[in-house]
Image 1 (cartoon, rainbow, N blue to C red):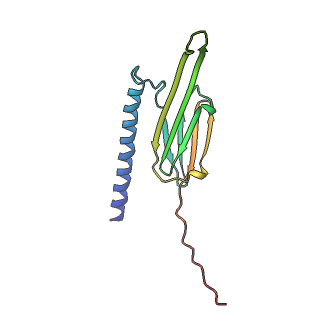
Image 2 (image 1 turned 90 degrees about the vertical axis):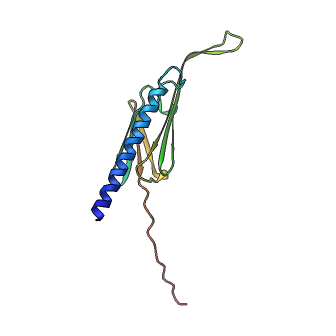
Image 3 (image 1 turned 45 degrees about the vertical axis):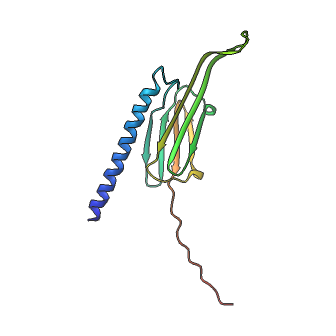
Length: 148
């Protein structure tokens, strides 16, 4: 019976991840339209889970590490970026940007709770890699009272 419950839980988790991916893809389609005003849209991302960590790989080409912001809670990772390409035209009475503003934001629901304090991120050749150790429940520790 426990095998059946475990199978159902795994299938429900898989279905939730598939639905999240479907809605993320749908949202990114609208973000890339001229009406969205968002620039480059949401980056593609892959989420992996190991016994000890949750790992996210996101493809963010053309950005520098200082142009990317990460925020992490126990169960969500938000990746934001903003890049200004071009220059300001100061000849006008009101300076305007000649170029383009590219920005994106993507929030990923994580499959497990993570320890946000121990998360690490690297960015190389347009690939962002975030490794987040899983949250571990603290073990109960019993303290013996000594007689004085």
